[in-house]
Length: 424
Image: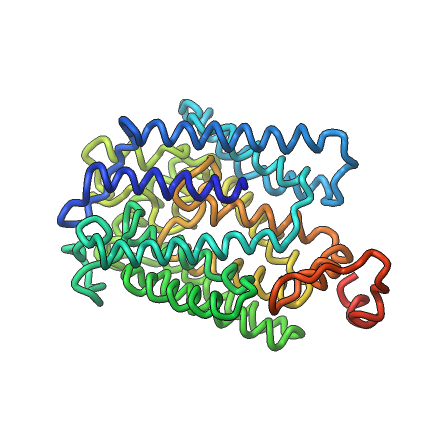
């Protein structure tokens, strides 16, 4: 339910914004986060609902035994939020209205002992988002699509699909990040329709970075699913993504490179050097957007996760996020094959998506928060007890509906002792 509410927060509020205000003829990104009327009501309603639900989960599990997830894993998941909060306070920024959401939700997930198969919900959400967006593109093109930007050359369609999201790039990012979880859908027909519709919507969005990330997600999933013993090939793919994300922006010297992202990268890194350890706070790009600046008109974020993390939270935030991501990636090693493939596909895809866009924020709810830090925390906490995951994978069969295993049914003979020992 937390996942669904987090998704609806961005999905419905943006849908109402688009229905209320319409879309402009060209892509114009505004830093104005103000909302009025029914949109504001929706924003605060979902914020309150998520906070209340997280609090209920925590209270409901307060008398339960200590979670099997080690305490340090909770610390790893909370560390990026703590660093951002500290950076904001150091830079004189006031905490946002949703500041309590991230720690409450993460703590609730830690206490709730969430099953890995819960991530299938994200797969269904991704498919629904893709189908709704495609439907809006064909039936309501005036609000579901937007014209290609004046700058750049990514014109594959006369229009770019945005659906209910604020920008075509956001749609492409959200769907490509959710693609690995679509593979958890049992029904074969729904799985095929889900993958095809998601890929079609990502392609129509014109987001080239997300197209690449989606292709990488499928490649890694197939590689790990069919060759579970392989270790070096996924690492090699990950290394290429890390090079694109972390090295290319630093080496960029032309402000016109990558559809003017070069200008944002150069200026952001220049500003970061003024405060290398703590950065300038999570509101850095919002603040510079209020005044005439040398970053360019589309500098509403760093347009690269590496650059964005350095500019907003400095080396401390970068280290905290890298630690979180590495821990999630490594947790996949002990999972049953299907879950391992999804985890590694998601982790590596995140790095590729981070090349030309900011993929994850750790400050609360957002348009894509439900598909960023939330599944990272879920994977980390659900993977803490491999023996439980082995039984979960047995119950959660990969074809058809999940079968109910009687409590007296012998466990070892069903899956084979060697298979159990490989994950325990």
